[in-house]
Length: 179
Image (cartoon, rainbow, N blue to C red):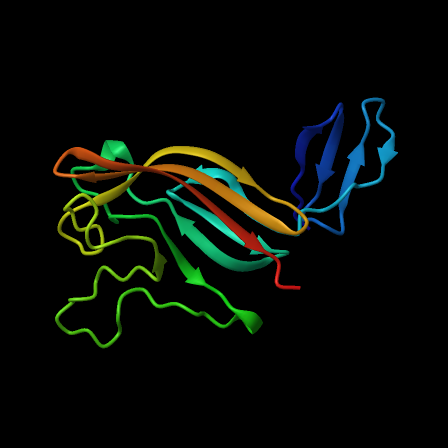
């Protein structure tokens, strides 16, 4: 059998997890005595800090969505995506609710459809909706928080067009458990 041990400091104690939560989560105080688990964060963000430009949001072990952070300021010359977005968005009974692009779009006129995103066609005269003008750039990643009822992501963004900052935004996404 394969096992994984994770150690983390928890208010003067240690949390031991081997291999996966919640059934095997054990908490120990500073003296090494086992203590009750206060709660297991049902709604989880994995990893808790961005890796590979995305965060995955889970309800227990079921993927709810992935938050793609959008272009980073150091990659403005050739960004893979022009704005942050959520994809896939998974509904009840693991049914995907979103597509990436349009399946019946032979001209690729809807290539800018990244499932679920926030944008506008005219902000300070720049188009942030399509693929040719504005970028919504991840300026600072502020917070990710897992919890028993909801999880939260807070990101500072800068709307940029033609090398000029058009608008600054502090985006807060909260995803609540469905049950």
